Length: 263
Image 1 (cartoon, rainbow, N blue to C red):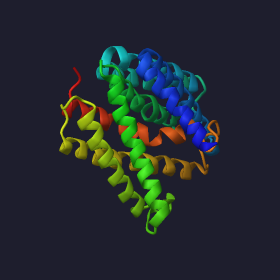
Image 2 (cartoon, helix red, strand yellow):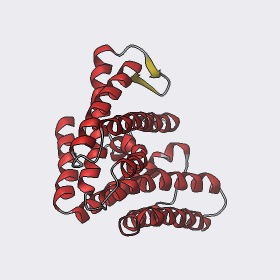
Image 3 (cartoon, rainbow, N blue to C red):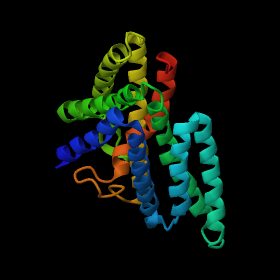
């Protein structure tokens, strides 16, 4: 079931990415909206109630703004969404005001703002290749880490946060991600990228992907929950699939802009 769901998610992303990129934008908007809903409801165990309406409206507008207006529009969208969260919560009175606003701003910065960099990757003429380079590198990191971690993993990286994540698995992630990234950067951009740029890109991705995974695990530990949701059988919630991707997206965007600038 987990493999089937993973394959289905890959098709949902890949097909519109290579056939109708505006539809891909719609897929990102829907995924982000579900992720924000999961993040808001995951805070119920600590009695925080971030305002969902300004998050959904502001987060969606943030992504559309990034598509049409670039990075500056994305940042302005984040600021306006944060203001909307602060103002919306005023109507409910002072009790737990700071906690609810802080939770809402965290969701806005963590989910739609970081996902906006995936939109920025997809916007140029070669956006499909850029998004592929981004997602494929993260997948290489995940697969390499899982494989070597299962085979020889003995030394936990952060036993109180994610007991199954080992240093041996991290080495596997690094090897697979660097090798995969060298192939992606040198083969997909008509010779514009070099092997060492691919290696640097891969090393950066493996670090951010690992930190993204550990960061979401830390949040779940703090909230006392196992998964962010149950929408995806065998995977948990949408946020449980986005954790590594979200933190990696801005790094992938910046490095690809540096190494293989968009036409």
